[in-house]
Amino acid sequence: MSRTRDTHVTDVTHPAVLSTSSTSSTAHGVEGQPDCWTRAAEMAVRHRALLPQRGERVAVVGSGASFSMAQAYAARREADGHGETDAFSASAFLYGREYDRIVALTRTGTAPAMLRLLGKVHDNVPSVAITASPDAPGIADHTLRLDFADEPRAAVATRFPTTALALLRAHLGENLDDATDDAYEAIEETLPSVLLGASRFTFLGSGWTYGIAEAAAQLMRDNAGTWAQAYQELEYRPRPAAEQQVTWVFGDVPDRLTEAVRESGGTLIASARDPLAELVRVQRLAMAALGRAAA
Image (cartoon, rainbow, N blue to C red; front, side, top):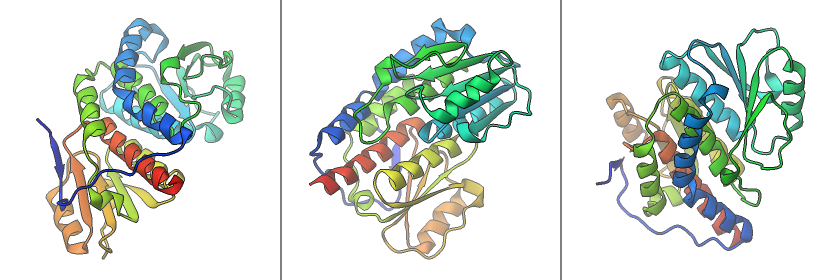
């Protein structure tokens, strides 16, 4: 039974058909994510000694969508009581801080900022790189290769960021069965026309889901060419909006927000799905925008 709850959504239509090889590769990447998450959870068990241990002080670094996943993991790890965890963009790492371990999220393993960072901390802090490329150089003390999550020809980065976070969540002891079931739902359902026709998006999260909200906003800005922003849920104050304004929440929705969005004239989107699975819906939305542009 579906656990989705979308507010102010009545009319539905099918997403646009994708027409280029890159968007076809993206579609394949989106659809393969639940299987990737399951494989990543299995890897987390096999390689648990290479990943942060309870009580360690940890820095997680990444760029783009990987940085958003680093933010989500850092907040989740601390909230679960595993130890102090900071998230940094690879180009903004604070070298004066002391850490027991550094986790680098890097799809290709060749980003210059990441190479510089791991080169500087080598021999001083144990490091592990999580990458999708089977050919990525050994830039850290240890490398976990999620080659099954690579997507070199995809127009939208989908599988690697979410699979890296799935791996790290599984290492925290989470059971991802519900998340993968939710992802299958998010892949198969029809996107509401209110989403396909929207021109402005505000994504909200709190705690670990703020990183998910940041990833969603980046997807819509960079890949769909759509106005999008992310807020911590408690910092957001809706303003009068056009009908094409969507406020999309990852996690529980307080009553005051439901009423405030309704009064602003916008549309509220929320779901009982796992937030990582709900991000898959945003990926599909960005993919649909690419398909319209390519048509």
